[in-house]
Image (cartoon, rainbow, N blue to C red; front, side, top):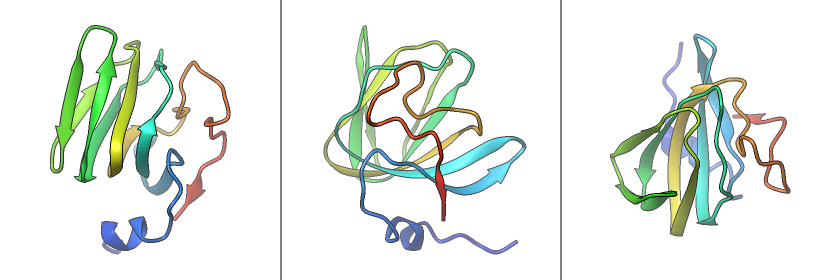
Length: 119
């Protein structure tokens, strides 16, 4: 039961699109990730995802609209909704999602992380 400093945790890694687990509660993971560029279109059939912007901004693309997320804002993507995060510049994001959630959802490619590092 110690406080977790987000700045310190984000300073421990530099790679993009590679979530790190920084906490667990009730079957949920709290993950930190750095985004830059375009991710892949994907969906999660069984899990909702929460994206909270810690630093910077990014656009969450949906098939019918785009949503701009700025620092201090969050967005919940409901299960089954196809989406793609896009960040022109590096953005720091905290994610809340079930521990079983695969980062690329129903799309398996070189960005898929089957095992996540814990910080």
